[in-house]
Length: 299
Picture (cartoon, rainbow, N blue to C red):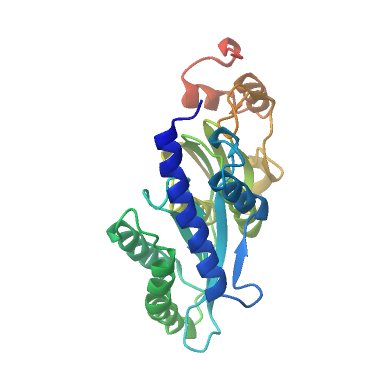
């Protein structure tokens, strides 16, 4: 049986989320300006607020993307990607932005400013509209700061290092995170995998600069816990890249789900261990979990 007080509080919070989504949709009415990740997620939240379903059946969160003009001429655009935890606005929203035209340094500086702004907003009050306004006011100077140095063409730096990065996360559930990780991997032409669930595991391999850029994008997302567990670097000869690769593509692993309910799912670590052994990476399992693969319980 649900706790009545907790349910009432959640309904109040989720009602605020619904009103904020409605407000943003009216602020950005043109096609492509505002897009929901899933209309069914919005419908589920609405059903909970109206008392048609109980909280344990509310397994999705509201997520959406807002396209924002990053200069006065609206020639440069950035995308604000938003996920709303069920307890938002009592807790901070999960947000990050994509701005391909922005230099890495400017991207980092703007992201730090955005994080500081969100942390300064009052919990309990919706803030995505304010976040959008902050980005509209602050992003133009970061976009323009990149354009001046680009007048002089620099000779591309040839990567001489092949890197394999092993990342551990407390969990990976968000469909948006998983989608973006796959999209970035394909864009940057890195190989490896992402294993969602609890815990979450990511392996990234490729030229050192590609892997560094991929890790930079991943770590700026909102995480409960994420860390590099192991980094492998190999000096390259001109034609030796493929000899170091353990994976042909970058893909999402989907082993048999073990235990848990709803979003709290776990992957079968025994099968994950076998997967690593088949690719000569069995030592990584011990680094992640501190036990021999053969002794992993399926419980």
